[in-house]
Amino acid sequence: MDPNQDKSDKAMVNFFRILEKATTHNSFVFWRECFSQVIYPLLDDIQLALNTQTTDLLKKHYLRTLDHLFTQLAHFLKDHSDRVPLCLYIDTLCLFIANLSN
Image (spheres, rainbow, N blue to C red):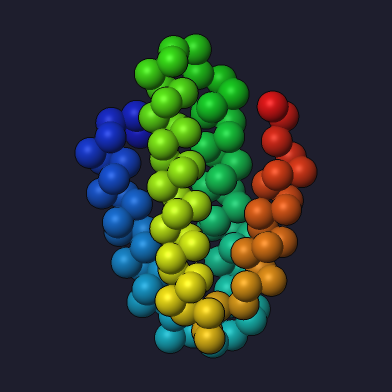
C-alpha cells in the first residue's frame, strides 16, 4: 500500500477497470476466488497498515483508501448485481469485520 495518494488513486482506478473486464465471467467459483484471494487480502493489508502506522497522516490515508474501496465496491456490485454474487461480498465483509482488532 503506497502512501502516495496519486499512486493509490491510480491503482484503485486500475483495480476496478480489471474488475469491470472480469464481469464477463459468470462463474460463482471465479468470483469466490476473486473475493477470497484478491479483495479480502486487500482489505486485510489496509487494516494491517492502519494498525501499524504511527502518524496521523498515514492513518488518514489508509482510512480514506478503505472508504474509497468500500464505496467503489458498492457501486460495482450495484452495477453488476446480475453477474457478481452479492453473498460473496457479504461473506468477505463479515470476515473482515470479524477480524478487526480495533
